[in-house]
Image (cartoon, rainbow, N blue to C red):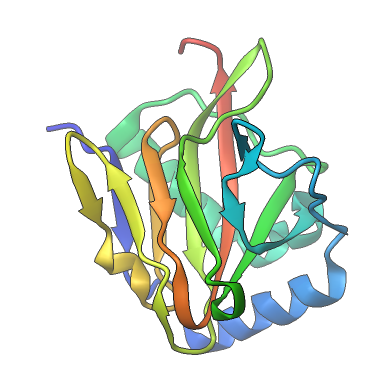
Length: 186
C-alpha cells in the first residue's frame, strides 16, 4: 500500500521546540516579501508572517529530523532526493488569529526546469494553544490531518498533494517548512 503522507506525533519535545523558535527568531535571514508570496490569480493565497532562514544556519538543530525524512522516504516513498543545499531557505510561518491567518488550497513546487519538489516537511513549533489552523489534504476527498495539531509533531507528504491551512481564529500557530527536491521525473 502506498501512502501519500506520514506523521510523527510529538517527535520534538518542548525544550527543542523552544530552542528552534528562539534560534530562528534571532537568526533568520529575511522576511518573505509581498512580491514573493504565493498567489492565485494575483490574489495572495495566504495570510501569515514568513521568516526565511538558510538551511546552513539551522541544519545542526534538525539533524534527527532530516534523517527521519530520508528514512521515511527510503521506506515509503522511494524518491531520489538531493541533499538540501546550504543556501536553501527554510520557511518559518506564524499564523495569527489577529487577521485569521490561513493558507488556501495549493500544491508545493518550484520554478526549475531541472528538479521537482518531491516531499514537504512540516514541523509544528507552536508554543501556545490555538484554535483553527487545521491542516487539510485533498486526496479524493478533503482530509483533516489532526495528528499535526500538537506541538512537536512532524508531517511528511508528497509535495504535489493539494493542501491548505484553515484560518486561525484564536492564538498563534507556528510551523517550519522544508522542501525536499529531486531530479525531474524520477
